[in-house]
Amino acid sequence: MRNVILFIGRYLTFFTFLFLQIVSLWFLYSFNQFHQARFSQTANELTGAVNKRYKNFENFFLQGEENRRLHRVNDSLLNLLSQQVATTDTSSRLVTDTLLIDSTRQYRRYYFRPASVVFNSTSSEKNYIQLDRGSLHGITENMSVLNADGSAVGIVVHVSPHFAQVMSLLHVRQKVNVSLQQTGDFGTLEWDGKDPGLLLLKGLPKSVPVKMGDPVVASKYSYNFPPGYPVGTIAEIIIDKSTNFYLLKVKPAARFNNLQYVFVVENLQYAEQTTLDQETRKKIEDAKRSSR
Image 1 (cartoon, one colour):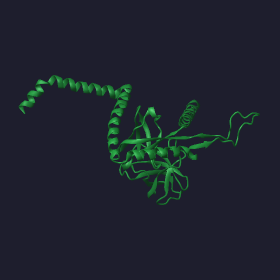
Image 2 (cartoon, rainbow, N blue to C red):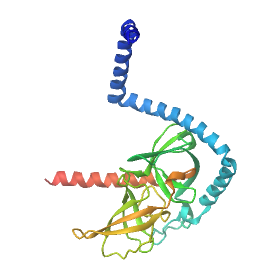
Image 3 (tube, rainbow, N blue to C red):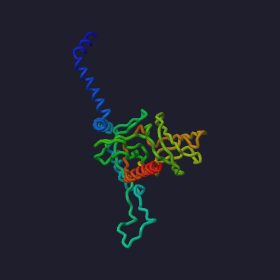
Image 4 (cartoon, rainbow, N blue to C red):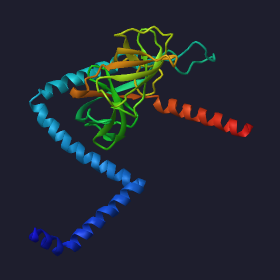
């Protein structure tokens, strides 16, 4: 004990300097958005590099190369599916003498990119997934992520040059527009932070016919997820007599404890849709203020 006290006394100045340095850095990165963003990107790169090395070692024993080959094949096939493209609406158009553009041509709506999971968590209230693809590979925020079997996994919330951070469906702040496959009625899917094997579907009226085992899919009203891809199945129906809505428990289609290869899906019209939505809301708010 005496030696410990002597040691601390001898290096007290150094320990004081170290403590003050840590405090100053904490203030710098906590209250400065630029430094906070730089620190977040650097930390993301470092943790991503470590996780990638660990995952590579793990894949050596899990036939990773064969899985990657099959994943790339699936990626190519998914991008060829007809549901990833849309046809121009020609039901009403201005007729001119010369049609400069082929009005019946198809345009791509969604684009799939393959990625590997290098980090994943399911044990906290705010779970994230890290992928080995980043901005250098065309990944940006708000892209959706599907498992190798096409089931919904989460949404990209942050990217660095080589890695992407995904907010899992098992995150208490995640909300996704989904619908019943049978009827098309839609609601909001979220998680209460309790059981990772059950999600909550809210906002579905009691007038909608619902039964156990009904499939739940990504809604066509979602800006992020391509419509129709599986999200889960109804596992429990809770009827709250105080409201006119169901509280449905949904078993997720994705196995979150065994995510290895995923697809990052880009909605090529995301910017146009969200910009229109924001401008519309702003226009209505401005009109309300001017009428007062």
